[in-house]
Amino acid sequence: MATSTIASHPTGETAQKHSSPQRLILISVLVATMGALAFGYDTGIIAGALPFMTLPVDQGGLGLNPLSEGLITASLIVGAAFGSLASGYLSDRFGRRVTLRVLAVLFIAGALGTAVAPSIAFMVAARFVLGIAVGGGSATVPVFIAEIAGPSKRARLVSRNELMIVSGQLLAYVLSAVLAALLHAPGIWRYMLAIATIPGLLLLVGTFFVPASPRWLAAKGRYDDAQAVLETLRDSPAEAKREVEAMKAHDQQHRSHASAGALLRQPWVRKLLLIGVGLGFTAQFTGVNAFMYYTPIILQHTGMGTNAALTATIGNGVVSVVATLLGIWAIGRYGRRHLLMTGLVIVVLMQAALGCVLQFMPQNLAQSYAALGCILVFLLFMQMCIAPVYWLLMSELFPMQVRGLLTGVAVSMQWLFNASVAFLFPVAVSTLGNPTFFVFAAINVGSLAFVFFCLPETKGKTLEQIEKHMKKEL
Image (cartoon, rainbow, N blue to C red):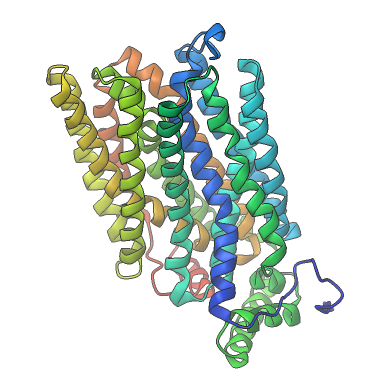
């Protein structure tokens, strides 16, 4: 296939010259993770907005009940399932960078729509659009980062995606508490939701200053462009050339054996997809988003006031950020399987402990703090050992020819699991009560067994080596 020159496509999926490879990689990661920051803010801000949105319409709210509350929360997540699936096709067809640019526009439009929503139906629709952007970003950003990073940096750089997600959630919690304390105007939740346009704008502008994915270029047969990009991302032209030659040999070998369609029919690829879907179930049925979305409401049930519950929820964000920083350190030193299993053991213990606190302790301040303590320990291990590993595995498990598509499918299923938890949690708590947390604990025991028996190790391998290893092992 003929290659195009850099000069003829100054704004397309082509290389850009920068003086420092490290600087360019860091800038590219920062720009791409603006999508993760928007993802985190949009999923976190609903925790602060919901108590005000449940107020009657004449008091500035939307008059939500438990059913509409769950519907509004879950509509973003259902949209994310569609967005991650569609972005998989778009990123394979048009490139990671173009896909991020489209998603940035949807982030802005969806955020503005939620801020001005006059009714529950409008809010659900706007949250669905916002969800398309969130889901698309969740599938595209880790893949883009993994494809510009070398194998030695991949784990740490991809994990920054999770750091930006939890930083966005922390920002949402802090702003919720600050706005609740300073502003007493009706419809305060509208200001909370409008702020989500900012990371979308930063992502849109930033996509014009980052390079293309060299592996996407190579997958399209544009090896000269791929090498030009890699020469801006690696320490020497010789290193870039070796990487391109490895990609070229890998692509030619696999194209001689199977097209993308035939590859999807191979048993090892189907098993990989099932493992990816299973990991999404594992990540979401920890119940993490029940805490991220509903912690203020959980704490209100222990007798804590609305403003105090919003302030206490900041602890969720602080712990998540600290835990993710620890996870970035740990993920470069320990295997993916080891971290996942460690995290799941603690998650099971904390879910059971929270159920006991809520079920058996009297409703007082001690119960509030004990419940918050269980939630914070849960989040520490969830965000240190499970969430970063999940997103890293989504960026490296699947073969290059269908990486965008399979990542999109797996992440789409993860969002459907997320939506199930978000929608069912308030209903489950209102019907089952506190034993809901014992149900989560039992589910996570099953997830622990799945990781132990089914998940291969990927630490220390290039993306091409991982693909070869998976084909052999599965």
